[in-house]
Length: 162
Image 1 (cartoon, rainbow, N blue to C red):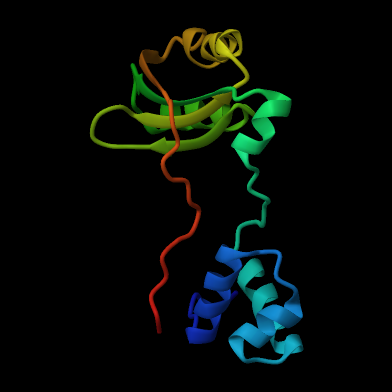
Image 2: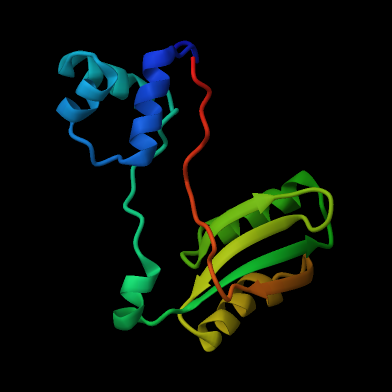
């Protein structure tokens, strides 16, 4: 996308896809009051421009729990010994490559990073902590909060009405 300019139709398409990315092109076009070929071109442009990063299925942890177990969801605060750009980037790349890390944020003030991690059980979490935190000489402090209940989970970015 040469320009990041988007119009009201683009915003409508983005919002609709955030709510349900499984909509057919025909259903999405009808919702936006545009033709299916126009809808397909616009969505392709939004994807190519990086405004749509990816489309995923969000799984129900509660419905999968009887088959897979609940596992442990944790929020982990990490403080590094050295906070230079190179040290932060190295840590960020290492944790981002780990499948157990679902989200990674650089934050300020306070810790340097906040991670959302998922582990099968406590031994699995301990293995994760060992490989990501304990073995890293630059990790100064780790503070883990285990989630006991998820009150809200969302992925939708509020968009302005144009």
